[in-house]
Amino acid sequence: MNINNTDLNIRPEVEQDTAFVERLYRSTREDLLQFGLAEALIDNLIQMQLQAQQTGYRMQFPDADYSIVEKKGEAIGYLVIDKGDEAIRLVYIAFLPHERNRGHGRRLIQALQTEASGANKPIKLSVDPQNMQAKHLYLSSGFQVKNNDGANLEMVWLGQAKD
Image (tube, rainbow, N blue to C red; front, side, top):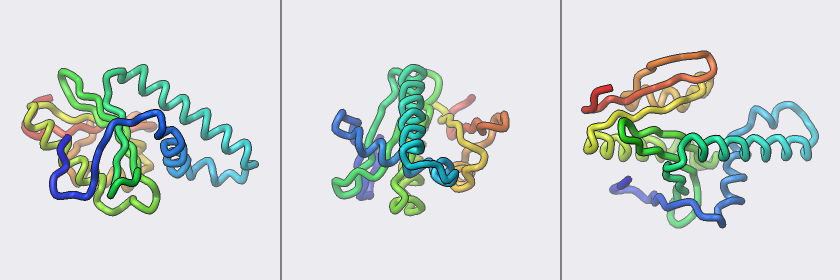
């Protein structure tokens, strides 16, 4: 994926990124931090859920690109994209709290849309319907809701491709 005119860089995830990925995942789980549980219990829950997420992604999307998003050489986000034969799936995208709402996600999605258009493929993703910021970003980027099972919204961007 090519991100022109931006200070962002995408590089493959390496083993040395483990601590960053853990810190980033923790920052996305504010829901667990609100329970008032003991810090050790929260740490264990977050670690177990991160492990389950990563294991699930790698089983379901073994050929996906697992990438670190950098800004001026500093890791600020995580991106998982599966480029299948029929569609491109945005599996996961997250940024550190201080880098959210700065247009990074929109720029990455636009770059992905350019790539998908060139390959004549749709982009598919799943998002928590309670994640209003992400939902707004996807809708304003041209994604459409294909299915809502209550736990997830399945969304698709068709661009020039046909579903």
